[in-house]
Length: 114
Image 1 (cartoon, rainbow, N blue to C red):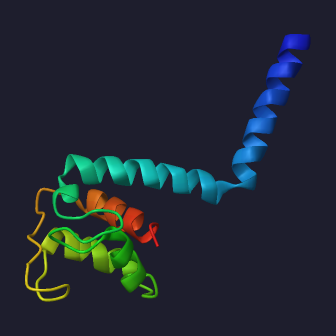
Image 2 (image 1 turned 60 degrees about the vertical axis):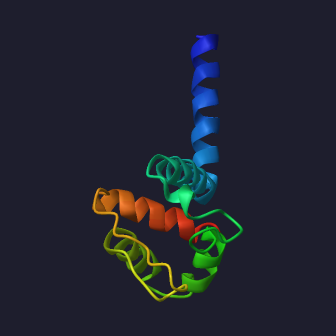
């Protein structure tokens, strides 16, 4: 009986912590999924976190678009469709291999870097 009550108390404490800080848990999940996906899809070949490489720094992208009400949707489309002339002369190729969910994950993650 004592073990059960300790287990229930531990579970209740864990749930209370999750409910008290859902943004933190969600943020950590987005960060780990976004970074892993960016590395897997070779986004980091052209983009670094804080400095321009071939493309702009991910932090700069987040700052530029954070104020848009449709920022995540806008970036997801830019990721899948590509673009040119926004950040200089080097075009961003379309990433048609990404699913809409993957593009949304990347966009949300990028926006979290501001």
